Image (cartoon, rainbow, N blue to C red; front, side):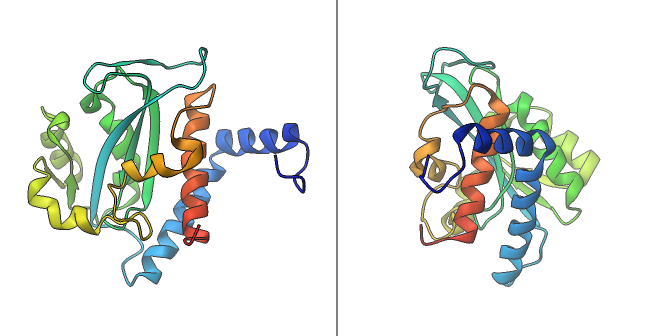
Length: 204
């Protein structure tokens, strides 16, 4: 902990409280809207990308952990919904063995409820099945399964200046290379803190 910070118990107490009350998410949402306006766009996106990433847990305990057979990773999976600027609109962390298509609604529905402008959702083949029909019927938006057709959009998905996949870029952040948190919701909070810092101080 930096020397000019309060005791770690105080800092952690505020962090945990802000996770529980949704303050980190609310700050991120407000900054995302501001950043979109700065970039000359509408505050709400018309296109959302969804992706997941399995990360190893840095400790033996903790809730919500599993084995991702496809990625050969034992730990947790973070599910991210982001726009074409690479700005995170929602994050959900869960056990790595849970299927993407089953947890996708938990990530997407809050974003779709929040923005009536969303017309398209870019996703890969792991989000197959009836998900597309359900989203189109409920929210009148189309899910595209072929990342190749969205290659131009992917190339523009700059996480605040970084030419990387909007989800993979998170691993370049020191605290997100692994999951150090006891609770999955605390990892979600760290994702929001990282994105808040990236927006406020993009040169870091």
